[in-house]
Amino acid sequence: MVPVTFFDREFKEIGPALVSADIECGDGSSDNDIEIKTSIGDAYGLCILGTDAGGFVEYLDAVTGETPEKKAFSWRGLLRMWVLTPPKGNDYLIIQNMDLNRALETVLSDVLGGFFQVPEYNSGITVNRYQFNLYTDALTGLSAMCESVGARLYIHAEKSADQKKILVYAEGKPIRVYEEEFSEVSALKLEFIRDDMKYNHMICMGKGELQSRLRVDLYLQEDGTFGTRKHFTGLYERQYYYDDNNADTVDKLTADGLKKFSEICPVKKMKIKKAPEGIEIGDIVKGTYAAENVTVVAPLSKKIYRVMGDRVTVEYAVKENSNG
Image (tube, rainbow, N blue to C red; front, side, top):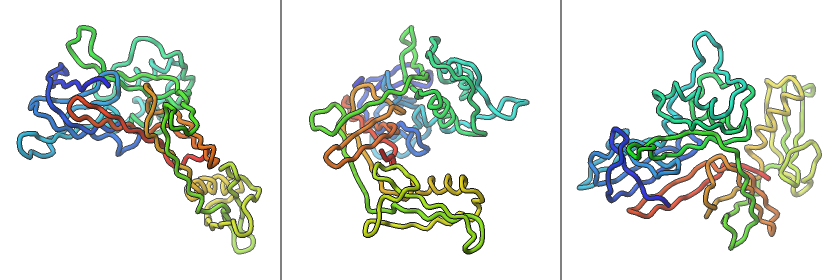
């Protein structure tokens, strides 16, 4: 792992120094804080070059002796705290017929004073048409646009060509799939959690009165999908009643029921204990534990960089409730 680089308010490199830091980078609202302890008093921020780990100090959290504690937002955290608004005279922010990198460049030109750089080269991925949700935050919106074309938002810090400043880049990269069967010797070390002690039959009731109420029955299938054919019966059936009085059609009741069912159905989770070099947020991990017939497919949602002196370790997390 590349050592930590400190920079001042001009984003010029300073240091070296002893440091301990926890750097969280993720796709959620609570995944992008940085806690820093360093003896460099004028350190404005830090980064690990070539990765999305980094940010600049927002405030001094506490002073306890010789080493002050500082707080920062990661680069992704900064994007999370910027709202995308439609251009003047337009109802929506829309991207059409543009290379993904040029699309990111277009949107990011108005974000944080154009702080994020976008490489001059094209990604090779075309955004035919993408309409952003109204007043979404930049991290959610840009990640969703990338995902719509099979890509992920890749953020990384690099030194400028003259080596004098730290620049932070955002670009689109194709989503990669890392597929691994549980093994003690594989590059992708996984831990599985399987919880089958939940509901497998949802009785969905929609609009209407008494016997005339709209009804849809949804069932969990053996492979973890949902359908209208009953699989678990008798002693193994677990029923859940879902009241959706606003649903006035079978399609609406089914759609609402499926959304709710995914929240209460048996859960298969996967933890990543060790990951191969180069895996990034947004890449897909498909893990299989054949002995227990468990398969989980989920995007990598978080990386936590733990810095202690010149030693850096990385922890990983995938989105939960991903049934294969």
